[in-house]
Length: 292
Image 1 (cartoon, rainbow, N blue to C red):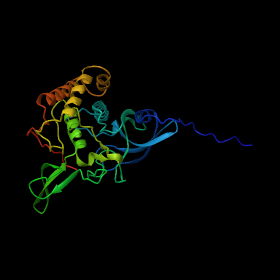
Image 2: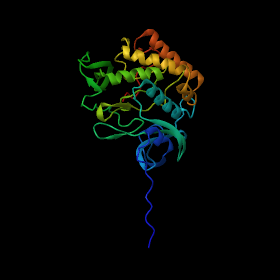
Image 3: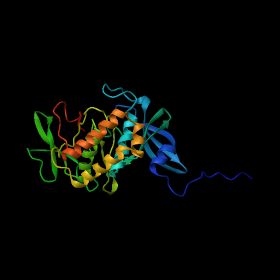
Image 4: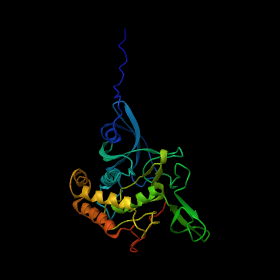
């Protein structure tokens, strides 16, 4: 009589996403070839539970002139930490861990609301649409954005023609604009916006963040110079306290430098002092290329 087949143990309670990502067995399934750095599509399994995820090994990072080599994965995790500290949950669960190709960033894969899977790093360049079908980005004719939209600037669309690039006047995008100002995001493109089921909006690709020098480049300039809403100011006040000392500061200290943490504090303080959304400095291109 043959021995009964062993059934793998399964926890009745699913682990938290961050625990699953950090402790699970990582299996590479494919590669996102459009990405500028190595981006691997994987599954992660722990105690009988599994999920799709993205793994970006440090060894696959392309060197950049203005960021120290081998630090982009840590910056992605730091962006998740700040997103969680705000309570807005704009960045998918992200951890730093060892994997098949060494240490790297591991992030939960997000299924967008239209049913097409998108992961990390320049997914498909569209910017997508929200769960209710509302577009997040658009090109429109004329000089004014129209109701429900915020103007970014004019873009060439071929044959000598231009169109006005606009983004939705959406509170989720507005929170993301504040988050990007806080983390000093140098590359907020349309393809980094992932509208998910239930009206959630996620943002990905935060490797070029937390530089001590001002690097903010984004498509979300529509609120530049406008007063920050009271609820967002309150979030920033709470963030000041969390950055002063304690668990958040300790976690960030393992991911970015002391100078970058001080610059982070200074950016939050400046937003509270001015009380308005930042505007382009005029010292460099304010919009990343390509914009989507």
